Each structure stands twice: as C-alpha cells, then as structure tokens.
Amino acid sequence: FQSGAAKSAGPERLKAGWESLKRLRRESVTTESRKLSVDDWPAVVKKFESGPFSMHELCTERELQEEGDVMQHCVGSFGDTCKHEPLRIFSIRMKKGGRRVATLAIRETRRGHWDVDQLKGPRNTDPGSGLWEDIDALLRVVTEVTRHNTRLRRFLDFLHTLEVDR
Image (cartoon, one colour):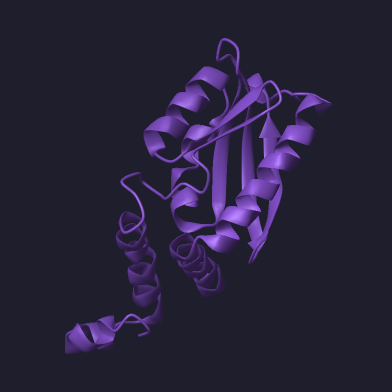
C-alpha cells in the first residue's frame, strides 16, 4: 500500500488471500533491487581490502555458485536468502595471488547493526583466528555505508519488512 501499487490492482487481486499478498511482496524485491544495481541483489561494499586480504561481495547466484564450487561448501544455495534477507556474502582472498581462504556471511540483525552470520574455510573448515581484525574493519565500513547511502538504506529497511511478514 505504501508504494501505491494497490491503486492499480484489479479487484481480483484485492480479494487475494494473505499468503498470496505475501508472495507478491517477496516478488517485488527484484523490482526494488534493480533500482539499485544490475546484480541479482545490490552490493553494500563490492570490494574491501584490509591487511593481507581482499574481500569481494558476491551479488549474483552465479558468483555464489562459483564460490561454493571452489570452496566446496553450500554457499551456492544462498541466492534466495541474499535476495530476500539483509544477508551479504563475501569471498575472502589473499591480496597476493588471489587464493580464496574463507567465505563470510554477514547479516544486518537490526537497523544499522551487522553481525557475522557464518565464516567458513574450504570444505567448511575453521579458517582460524587471523581474519577477525580484518572482518571487524569490514563490518565498520558496511555499517557506515548503510547509514549514509539512503537508497541502500531504504532497500534494507524494505527487506526487514519482509522478515516481519514471515
């Protein structure tokens, strides 16, 4: 209703059940996402470097699948989650040589507050403690970007409303 879409909806849509309306709301994520980027979902920070690491945000299902294939874990199946929830995935690589060392999932648990959701090395191994300082630096940057980029902030707030609908 806030978008004004109800004004153009036919009478049959206005009589739709709650589950049907929730499905339509989830489908509108693609439209909102396209306003911000050409990827499957908008990037928060496309690339970030800290210490010896380069962190690349994965913003398409193809990128997630490639990461999952190379790292031999299930991140390739996270596309729907990244589209419909405030979850972002990063491939952590060595700056020198580009070797992948870990896959990081971060989630905005509440407005402006990002936490580590998962951190996995190849084949779901523990990547060790050497990444945490650089991950903290990434979280600070992501927090600042999502505070100051108003278009991205509106999109993330929209995703949070979808969580309430579940």
